[in-house]
Length: 80
Figure 1 (cartoon, rainbow, N blue to C red):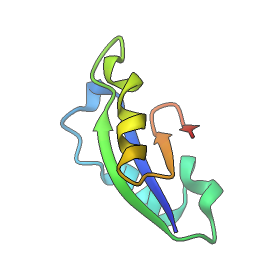
Figure 2 (cartoon, helix red, strand yellow):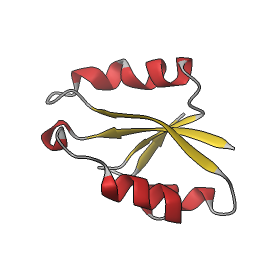
Figure 3 (spheres, helix red, strand yellow):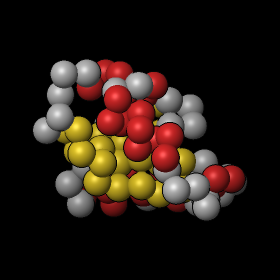
């Protein structure tokens, strides 16, 4: 099982994550590399707003708390 953390843009800070969670479940967009694998979303947070102050700390914190990979659903990048 791959445990994933998701980082979203701070502009969408009030987002409930429907599209991200659906994409992880259906292996769409950023999550298409996990087709055929079990995926569990273990973290979901914003970047902290421009200029992305939280982006330096959030991936490390998520990994410390069991995330195997971090996905940025805004730009569809994957951080390891």
